[in-house]
Image 1 (cartoon, rainbow, N blue to C red):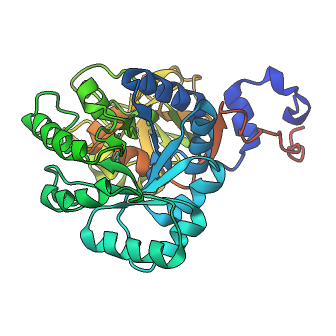
Image 2 (image 1 turned 180 degrees about the horizontal axis):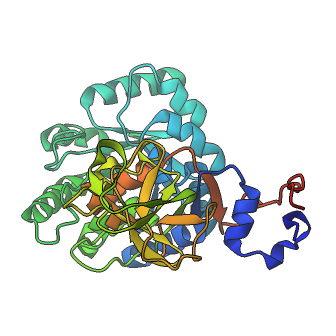
Length: 406
Ligand SMILES: *Cc1c(COP(=O)(O)O)cnc(C)c1O
Protein backbone atom coordinates (compact mmCIF):
# COMPACT_ATOMS: atom_id res chain seq x y z
CA UNK A 1 0.00 0.00 0.00
CA UNK A 2 1.17 3.50 -0.77
CA UNK A 3 2.26 5.04 2.51
CA UNK A 4 1.02 8.50 1.51
CA UNK A 5 -2.56 7.31 1.20
CA UNK A 6 -2.41 5.23 4.34
CA UNK A 7 -4.20 7.06 7.15
CA UNK A 8 -1.65 8.16 9.72
CA UNK A 9 -3.60 6.51 12.50
CA UNK A 10 -2.95 3.08 11.02
CA UNK A 11 0.81 3.47 11.16
CA UNK A 12 2.82 2.64 14.23
CA UNK A 13 4.39 5.66 15.90
CA UNK A 14 7.77 4.53 14.61
CA UNK A 15 6.55 4.10 11.04
CA UNK A 16 5.03 7.55 11.29
CA UNK A 17 8.32 9.05 12.42
CA UNK A 18 10.22 7.33 9.68
CA UNK A 19 7.72 8.55 7.13
CA UNK A 20 8.08 12.09 8.43
CA UNK A 21 11.87 11.92 8.44
CA UNK A 22 12.83 9.69 5.53
CA UNK A 23 16.43 10.93 5.42
CA UNK A 24 17.06 10.92 9.15
CA UNK A 25 19.95 8.77 10.31
CA UNK A 26 18.59 8.92 13.80
CA UNK A 27 15.60 10.22 15.71
CA UNK A 28 15.94 11.77 19.14
CA UNK A 29 12.64 12.04 20.99
CA UNK A 30 12.47 14.38 23.96
CA UNK A 31 9.50 13.80 26.26
CA UNK A 32 8.64 17.24 27.64
CA UNK A 33 5.88 15.77 29.80
CA UNK A 34 8.45 13.54 31.48
CA UNK A 35 10.67 16.57 32.14
CA UNK A 36 7.69 18.38 33.65
CA UNK A 37 6.80 15.31 35.75
CA UNK A 38 10.38 15.17 37.01
CA UNK A 39 10.26 18.88 37.86
CA UNK A 40 6.99 18.44 39.77
CA UNK A 41 8.48 15.56 41.73
CA UNK A 42 11.53 17.64 42.69
CA UNK A 43 9.30 20.59 43.55
CA UNK A 44 7.24 18.38 45.87
CA UNK A 45 10.37 17.01 47.49
CA UNK A 46 11.74 20.50 48.11
CA UNK A 47 8.57 22.34 49.13
CA UNK A 48 8.38 25.00 50.61
CA UNK A 49 11.61 25.86 48.75
CA UNK A 50 11.14 27.21 45.25
CA UNK A 51 12.15 24.74 42.53
CA UNK A 52 14.08 26.42 39.71
CA UNK A 53 15.10 24.79 36.42
CA UNK A 54 18.68 24.54 35.16
CA UNK A 55 18.60 24.66 31.36
CA UNK A 56 22.27 25.31 30.60
CA UNK A 57 24.03 23.52 27.74
CA UNK A 58 20.84 23.55 25.68
CA UNK A 59 18.96 21.96 28.57
CA UNK A 60 21.53 19.15 28.79
CA UNK A 61 21.06 18.53 25.07
CA UNK A 62 17.24 18.45 25.21
CA UNK A 63 16.58 21.90 23.71
CA UNK A 64 16.68 24.90 26.06
CA UNK A 65 13.80 26.92 24.60
CA UNK A 66 11.43 23.95 24.41
CA UNK A 67 12.27 22.73 27.90
CA UNK A 68 12.13 26.18 29.50
CA UNK A 69 8.76 26.88 27.89
CA UNK A 70 7.31 23.60 29.15
CA UNK A 71 8.65 24.14 32.67
CA UNK A 72 7.37 27.72 32.78
CA UNK A 73 3.93 26.46 31.75
CA UNK A 74 4.13 24.03 34.69
CA UNK A 75 4.88 26.87 37.10
CA UNK A 76 8.68 27.14 37.15
CA UNK A 77 9.60 30.76 37.78
CA UNK A 78 13.41 30.81 37.86
CA UNK A 79 15.87 29.48 35.28
CA UNK A 80 19.63 29.09 35.20
CA UNK A 81 21.87 29.00 32.13
CA UNK A 82 25.67 29.02 31.86
CA UNK A 83 26.25 31.78 29.31
CA UNK A 84 24.75 35.00 28.00
CA UNK A 85 24.19 33.38 24.60
CA UNK A 86 22.14 30.69 26.30
CA UNK A 87 20.16 33.38 28.13
CA UNK A 88 19.40 35.01 24.80
CA UNK A 89 17.88 31.75 23.56
CA UNK A 90 15.89 31.05 26.73
CA UNK A 91 14.56 34.55 27.45
CA UNK A 92 11.86 34.67 24.70
CA UNK A 93 10.58 31.26 25.83
CA UNK A 94 10.02 32.42 29.43
CA UNK A 95 9.10 36.11 29.28
CA UNK A 96 8.07 36.50 32.91
CA UNK A 97 10.68 34.34 34.65
CA UNK A 98 13.87 35.21 36.52
CA UNK A 99 16.87 34.13 34.46
CA UNK A 100 20.36 33.72 35.95
CA UNK A 101 23.66 33.26 34.10
CA UNK A 102 25.92 30.97 36.13
CA UNK A 103 29.19 31.32 34.30
CA UNK A 104 30.53 34.53 35.85
CA UNK A 105 30.26 38.17 34.81
CA UNK A 106 32.55 39.29 31.98
CA UNK A 107 33.72 42.84 31.46
CA UNK A 108 31.61 45.05 29.17
CA UNK A 109 28.62 42.70 29.14
CA UNK A 110 26.35 44.72 31.44
CA UNK A 111 24.35 46.14 28.56
CA UNK A 112 23.66 42.64 27.24
CA UNK A 113 22.34 41.59 30.64
CA UNK A 114 19.99 44.56 30.63
CA UNK A 115 18.92 43.95 27.04
CA UNK A 116 18.13 40.28 27.67
CA UNK A 117 16.84 41.01 31.19
CA UNK A 118 18.88 38.36 32.93
CA UNK A 119 20.95 38.38 36.09
CA UNK A 120 24.64 37.58 36.50
CA UNK A 121 25.75 35.10 39.13
CA UNK A 122 28.67 37.04 40.56
CA UNK A 123 31.50 35.07 42.08
CA UNK A 124 34.36 37.51 42.36
CA UNK A 125 34.77 40.99 43.86
CA UNK A 126 36.06 42.42 40.57
CA UNK A 127 32.94 41.16 38.83
CA UNK A 128 30.83 42.78 41.51
CA UNK A 129 32.65 46.11 41.13
CA UNK A 130 32.19 46.07 37.33
CA UNK A 131 28.54 45.15 37.67
CA UNK A 132 27.99 47.94 40.19
CA UNK A 133 29.57 50.48 37.85
CA UNK A 134 27.33 49.34 35.03
CA UNK A 135 24.20 49.53 37.18
CA UNK A 136 25.10 52.97 38.53
CA UNK A 137 25.82 54.42 35.08
CA UNK A 138 22.88 52.86 33.30
CA UNK A 139 20.30 52.95 36.07
CA UNK A 140 19.71 49.19 35.50
CA UNK A 141 18.38 47.44 38.58
CA UNK A 142 17.66 43.95 37.30
CA UNK A 143 19.44 42.23 40.17
CA UNK A 144 22.29 39.77 40.54
CA UNK A 145 23.14 36.66 42.53
CA UNK A 146 26.16 36.33 44.79
CA UNK A 147 27.94 32.98 44.50
CA UNK A 148 29.97 31.94 47.54
CA UNK A 149 32.51 29.15 47.42
CA UNK A 150 32.07 26.78 50.36
CA UNK A 151 34.62 24.15 49.43
CA UNK A 152 34.43 23.30 45.74
CA UNK A 153 37.06 25.85 44.75
CA UNK A 154 35.52 26.58 41.39
CA UNK A 155 33.47 29.77 41.25
CA UNK A 156 32.48 32.07 44.04
CA UNK A 157 33.62 34.61 46.61
CA UNK A 158 35.46 33.23 49.59
CA UNK A 159 33.46 33.30 52.79
CA UNK A 160 35.68 36.14 54.03
CA UNK A 161 35.03 38.16 50.87
CA UNK A 162 31.33 37.53 51.27
CA UNK A 163 31.44 38.79 54.84
CA UNK A 164 32.87 42.01 53.43
CA UNK A 165 29.65 42.78 51.57
CA UNK A 166 27.33 42.20 54.53
CA UNK A 167 27.32 45.93 55.47
CA UNK A 168 25.97 46.64 51.99
CA UNK A 169 23.24 44.02 52.49
CA UNK A 170 22.33 45.52 55.84
CA UNK A 171 22.15 48.99 54.31
CA UNK A 172 19.33 47.78 52.04
CA UNK A 173 18.72 48.55 48.34
CA UNK A 174 21.67 46.29 47.45
CA UNK A 175 20.41 44.72 44.22
CA UNK A 176 21.25 41.17 45.39
CA UNK A 177 18.36 38.83 44.61
CA UNK A 178 19.95 35.49 45.53
CA UNK A 179 22.84 34.14 47.57
CA UNK A 180 24.04 30.73 46.49
CA UNK A 181 26.74 28.10 46.71
CA UNK A 182 27.31 24.80 44.93
CA UNK A 183 27.91 21.31 46.34
CA UNK A 184 30.93 19.38 45.10
CA UNK A 185 29.90 15.83 46.10
CA UNK A 186 26.14 15.87 46.59
CA UNK A 187 25.59 12.53 44.81
CA UNK A 188 27.54 10.74 47.56
CA UNK A 189 25.20 10.59 50.55
CA UNK A 190 27.89 9.95 53.13
CA UNK A 191 30.60 12.23 51.85
CA UNK A 192 31.55 14.48 54.80
CA UNK A 193 32.12 17.40 52.41
CA UNK A 194 28.34 17.81 52.22
CA UNK A 195 27.95 18.59 55.92
CA UNK A 196 30.98 20.90 55.83
CA UNK A 197 29.58 22.86 52.90
CA UNK A 198 26.15 22.97 54.53
CA UNK A 199 27.53 24.44 57.75
CA UNK A 200 29.64 27.00 55.93
CA UNK A 201 26.78 28.06 53.68
CA UNK A 202 24.22 28.21 56.47
CA UNK A 203 26.41 30.59 58.46
CA UNK A 204 27.24 32.99 55.67
CA UNK A 205 23.77 32.90 54.05
CA UNK A 206 22.16 33.78 57.38
CA UNK A 207 24.03 37.10 57.28
CA UNK A 208 22.45 37.99 53.93
CA UNK A 209 19.26 39.02 55.65
CA UNK A 210 16.21 39.07 53.43
CA UNK A 211 18.07 37.55 50.46
CA UNK A 212 16.81 34.13 49.28
CA UNK A 213 19.44 31.38 49.61
CA UNK A 214 20.15 28.38 47.37
CA UNK A 215 22.58 25.48 47.76
CA UNK A 216 21.20 22.26 46.28
CA UNK A 217 21.60 20.89 42.76
CA UNK A 218 19.59 17.76 41.85
CA UNK A 219 21.48 15.44 44.15
CA UNK A 220 21.53 18.04 46.92
CA UNK A 221 17.73 17.98 47.04
CA UNK A 222 17.92 14.33 48.12
CA UNK A 223 20.38 15.05 50.93
CA UNK A 224 17.46 16.32 52.99
CA UNK A 225 15.41 19.42 53.75
CA UNK A 226 18.29 21.19 55.51
CA UNK A 227 20.01 21.43 52.11
CA UNK A 228 17.03 22.98 50.35
CA UNK A 229 17.01 26.56 51.76
CA UNK A 230 14.75 28.95 49.77
CA UNK A 231 15.45 27.60 46.30
CA UNK A 232 16.77 24.38 44.73
CA UNK A 233 18.51 24.27 41.34
CA UNK A 234 18.00 20.87 39.69
CA UNK A 235 19.45 20.13 36.29
CA UNK A 236 20.36 16.50 35.64
CA UNK A 237 17.35 15.02 37.46
CA UNK A 238 14.98 16.96 35.21
CA UNK A 239 16.48 15.09 32.28
CA UNK A 240 16.19 11.63 33.81
CA UNK A 241 19.74 11.20 35.08
CA UNK A 242 19.83 9.44 38.44
CA UNK A 243 20.51 12.08 41.13
CA UNK A 244 20.96 9.32 43.73
CA UNK A 245 23.43 6.95 42.04
CA UNK A 246 23.74 4.87 45.22
CA UNK A 247 20.02 4.00 44.97
CA UNK A 248 17.36 3.36 42.31
CA UNK A 249 16.63 6.25 39.98
CA UNK A 250 13.58 8.16 41.24
CA UNK A 251 13.26 10.10 37.96
CA UNK A 252 11.51 9.25 34.70
CA UNK A 253 13.52 8.73 31.51
CA UNK A 254 13.23 11.67 29.13
CA UNK A 255 15.08 10.90 25.91
CA UNK A 256 14.76 8.09 23.44
CA UNK A 257 17.34 7.69 20.71
CA UNK A 258 16.85 5.54 17.66
CA UNK A 259 19.20 5.17 14.72
CA UNK A 260 18.61 3.60 11.36
CA UNK A 261 19.87 0.22 10.28
CA UNK A 262 21.42 0.95 6.90
CA UNK A 263 22.74 -2.52 6.03
CA UNK A 264 22.55 -6.08 7.24
CA UNK A 265 25.44 -8.33 6.33
CA UNK A 266 26.65 -11.85 6.95
CA UNK A 267 30.12 -12.35 8.37
CA UNK A 268 31.92 -15.66 8.42
CA UNK A 269 33.48 -17.23 11.45
CA UNK A 270 36.98 -15.79 11.89
CA UNK A 271 36.24 -12.56 9.99
CA UNK A 272 36.76 -9.29 11.76
CA UNK A 273 34.42 -6.29 11.92
CA UNK A 274 35.33 -2.62 11.80
CA UNK A 275 38.43 -0.45 12.06
CA UNK A 276 41.53 -2.23 13.25
CA UNK A 277 39.82 -5.62 13.00
CA UNK A 278 39.58 -5.71 16.77
CA UNK A 279 36.44 -7.86 16.92
CA UNK A 280 36.40 -11.38 15.50
CA UNK A 281 33.27 -13.36 14.68
CA UNK A 282 33.25 -16.56 16.75
CA UNK A 283 30.44 -18.05 14.65
CA UNK A 284 28.66 -17.26 11.39
CA UNK A 285 27.35 -13.84 12.33
CA UNK A 286 24.73 -11.37 11.13
CA UNK A 287 25.75 -7.79 11.57
CA UNK A 288 23.47 -4.75 11.42
CA UNK A 289 25.20 -1.52 10.48
CA UNK A 290 23.59 1.33 12.40
CA UNK A 291 23.85 4.97 11.30
CA UNK A 292 25.23 6.51 14.48
CA UNK A 293 28.79 6.97 15.61
CA UNK A 294 31.03 9.06 17.78
CA UNK A 295 30.28 12.19 15.73
CA UNK A 296 26.70 11.70 16.96
CA UNK A 297 27.83 11.52 20.58
CA UNK A 298 27.90 7.73 20.72
CA UNK A 299 31.33 7.44 22.31
CA UNK A 300 34.07 5.28 20.85
CA UNK A 301 34.64 4.02 24.39
CA UNK A 302 31.51 1.87 23.91
CA UNK A 303 33.33 -0.27 21.29
CA UNK A 304 33.54 -4.06 21.69
CA UNK A 305 36.83 -5.80 21.01
CA UNK A 306 37.92 -9.41 21.32
CA UNK A 307 37.82 -9.99 25.04
CA UNK A 308 35.96 -6.81 26.01
CA UNK A 309 32.23 -6.28 25.80
CA UNK A 310 30.92 -2.94 24.63
CA UNK A 311 27.53 -1.31 24.85
CA UNK A 312 24.25 -2.87 23.74
CA UNK A 313 21.43 -1.58 21.59
CA UNK A 314 17.88 -2.88 21.25
CA UNK A 315 16.87 -4.28 17.88
CA UNK A 316 13.42 -5.77 17.35
CA UNK A 317 12.82 -5.73 21.09
CA UNK A 318 16.00 -7.63 22.01
CA UNK A 319 19.33 -6.44 23.35
CA UNK A 320 22.16 -6.92 20.88
CA UNK A 321 25.85 -6.27 21.53
CA UNK A 322 28.00 -3.77 19.66
CA UNK A 323 30.60 -5.49 17.46
CA UNK A 324 33.97 -3.84 16.87
CA UNK A 325 34.92 -0.20 17.09
CA UNK A 326 32.39 2.60 16.94
CA UNK A 327 33.22 4.67 13.84
CA UNK A 328 32.50 8.34 13.26
CA UNK A 329 29.11 7.86 11.57
CA UNK A 330 28.37 4.17 11.97
CA UNK A 331 28.47 1.25 14.33
CA UNK A 332 28.06 -2.52 13.94
CA UNK A 333 25.73 -4.64 16.04
CA UNK A 334 25.63 -8.43 16.32
CA UNK A 335 22.05 -9.49 15.51
CA UNK A 336 22.75 -13.19 15.03
CA UNK A 337 20.44 -14.15 17.89
CA UNK A 338 17.39 -12.41 16.38
CA UNK A 339 14.87 -14.22 14.19
CA UNK A 340 15.97 -13.93 10.58
CA UNK A 341 12.90 -11.95 9.62
CA UNK A 342 12.73 -9.79 12.72
CA UNK A 343 14.72 -6.95 11.26
CA UNK A 344 15.25 -5.38 7.86
CA UNK A 345 17.29 -2.58 6.36
CA UNK A 346 15.59 0.72 7.26
CA UNK A 347 14.38 -0.44 10.66
CA UNK A 348 15.54 1.45 13.72
CA UNK A 349 17.83 0.31 16.50
CA UNK A 350 17.24 1.83 19.94
CA UNK A 351 20.38 3.31 21.46
CA UNK A 352 18.69 4.99 24.42
CA UNK A 353 15.30 3.75 25.61
CA UNK A 354 13.57 0.36 25.88
CA UNK A 355 15.47 -0.19 29.11
CA UNK A 356 18.79 1.30 28.01
CA UNK A 357 19.30 4.31 30.24
CA UNK A 358 21.54 7.31 29.88
CA UNK A 359 23.31 6.16 33.03
CA UNK A 360 23.94 2.71 31.53
CA UNK A 361 25.51 4.29 28.44
CA UNK A 362 27.57 6.55 30.66
CA UNK A 363 28.96 3.45 32.33
CA UNK A 364 30.08 2.06 28.95
CA UNK A 365 31.55 5.42 27.95
CA UNK A 366 33.46 5.65 31.22
CA UNK A 367 31.73 8.91 32.10
CA UNK A 368 28.59 10.34 33.72
CA UNK A 369 25.07 10.79 32.36
CA UNK A 370 25.63 14.54 32.09
CA UNK A 371 28.27 14.02 29.41
CA UNK A 372 26.10 11.51 27.54
CA UNK A 373 23.28 14.07 27.42
CA UNK A 374 25.37 17.10 26.48
CA UNK A 375 27.09 15.05 23.75
CA UNK A 376 23.86 14.05 22.01
CA UNK A 377 24.51 14.71 18.33
CA UNK A 378 23.16 17.47 16.14
CA UNK A 379 22.46 15.17 13.18
CA UNK A 380 19.43 13.45 14.66
CA UNK A 381 15.93 14.53 13.70
CA UNK A 382 14.55 15.94 16.94
CA UNK A 383 11.00 15.25 17.95
CA UNK A 384 9.23 16.64 21.00
CA UNK A 385 6.47 14.83 22.82
CA UNK A 386 4.04 16.59 25.15
CA UNK A 387 4.61 20.05 26.58
CA UNK A 388 1.50 21.58 25.00
CA UNK A 389 2.17 20.24 21.55
CA UNK A 390 5.24 22.24 20.64
CA UNK A 391 5.77 18.97 18.83
CA UNK A 392 7.00 19.01 15.31
CA UNK A 393 4.02 17.49 13.46
CA UNK A 394 5.08 14.27 11.75
CA UNK A 395 3.47 15.18 8.43
CA UNK A 396 3.66 12.50 5.81
CA UNK A 397 5.85 13.11 2.77
CA UNK A 398 4.61 12.85 -0.81
CA UNK A 399 4.63 9.34 -2.23
CA UNK A 400 7.86 8.03 -3.71
CA UNK A 401 7.72 7.53 -7.49
CA UNK A 402 6.45 4.03 -8.18
CA UNK A 403 9.18 1.43 -8.12
CA UNK A 404 9.97 -0.54 -11.26
CA UNK A 405 8.20 -3.61 -9.94
CA UNK A 406 4.90 -1.74 -9.39
C1 LIG B 1 24.89 22.78 36.65
C2 LIG B 1 24.59 23.41 37.94
C3 LIG B 1 23.45 23.02 38.67
C4 LIG B 1 22.60 21.82 38.28
O1 LIG B 1 23.32 20.67 38.68
P1 LIG B 1 22.73 19.18 38.50
O2 LIG B 1 23.73 18.35 39.18
O3 LIG B 1 22.68 18.93 37.04
O4 LIG B 1 21.40 19.15 39.13
C5 LIG B 1 23.13 23.75 39.80
N1 LIG B 1 23.92 24.77 40.23
C6 LIG B 1 25.05 25.13 39.57
C7 LIG B 1 25.87 26.24 40.09
C8 LIG B 1 25.43 24.46 38.42
O5 LIG B 1 26.55 24.81 37.78
